[in-house]
Length: 148
Image 1 (tube, rainbow, N blue to C red):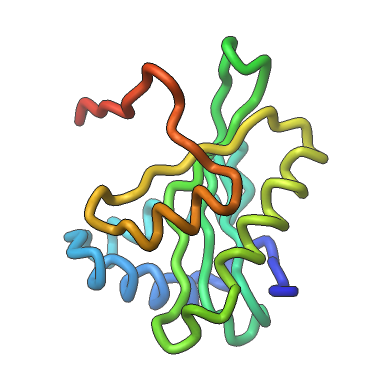
Image 2: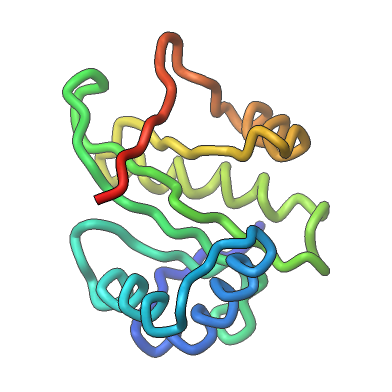
């Protein structure tokens, strides 16, 4: 089973490199300063989210960024997997499945009612993995975003 470690400020450099790799792969433009500003509050214990390192904390093979919210419809606190990344060299070994099994079980123990994620429409293999792990599109709902 892949180890999940709650990331702390001392993991910032390692995590920043992993996030930069993910953003490069997904063609997400973000400066190093903006990346650090986004990560550091979560590493310092912000109640708005958490970051987990996947694999050994000294040499992680990936990470998961989770944010928290509230949903009346589902009856309480929910989580949103904002990013999940596994290094290309270790993909297709079941690590993603292990993370998506362990993390929701752990979060349910903290009182979360649901975990959400979004998936690129052009990545059917990733969609199949998420469906296999119990994630499914919600009836009548499409995630929409307004940038502020």
